[in-house]
Image (cartoon, rainbow, N blue to C red; front, side, top):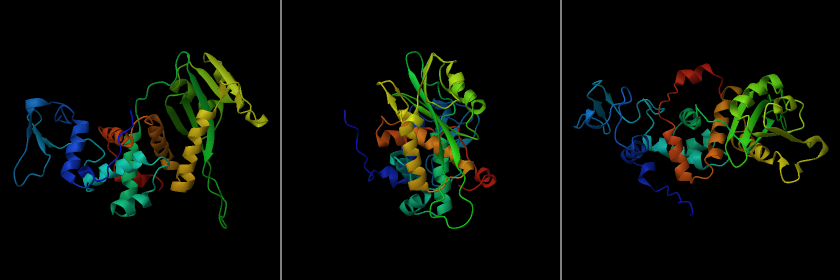
Length: 309
């Protein structure tokens, strides 16, 4: 069945009331839920009146007012909710990502607002409790790569630092990527055994990091890239994880140009999310991204403590 086409003329991208109703339908499919005590149904009253802003409810148990944005990344945000919904759609449908400068131009904010809005949405993309990759009769590919560090056309100063990224990807399944300080068995083993089921067949390149770790899995195969071997037969290859890295690097070099070490894990969450929801339409992916806003808060002071990115 063909995927539904996106219509940016939809009122949810321009009308704040329609955007709020859309957000309520995603987070409250069965009606309003108090974010503090969890009650529903007739224990919730919708507040109305000229002095009450739209979308405010009151819980009869904890006796506190709330709206759909309470307890989400949008709580206390002064950005119109329609712009949140539009930004989520743009992030979800941009295969190689979108820069904050581009978002600034498209939704009419300043750069700082666009930058922080995208970082909040990347928190939505982050799955705090992912299930294990692979399993019996399944293949999990593992590989590492580096982003940043290109000093081409840089006349002065030290070259930018390279950041190591390690990824595990289940063939025809999901991906998990991680920013790691060093690429060695001590660093990678805890990630691999925690992320991938040991019933899986582990597929890697010829790096000496992997053979001992591979002994802990149902099987371990490798291809020798240093000898220009990339596919052996129709089973031994790491092309799936390398394709993921290719898209990630096109985003870093072509869209963002520079990603700080402090925020790299957020960009990885964004690219993981798009890969893991690749079978959805752009609109469905944006809805999944907005559902991830629930139960998360990201404050400006947290970003202030970190390096700019």
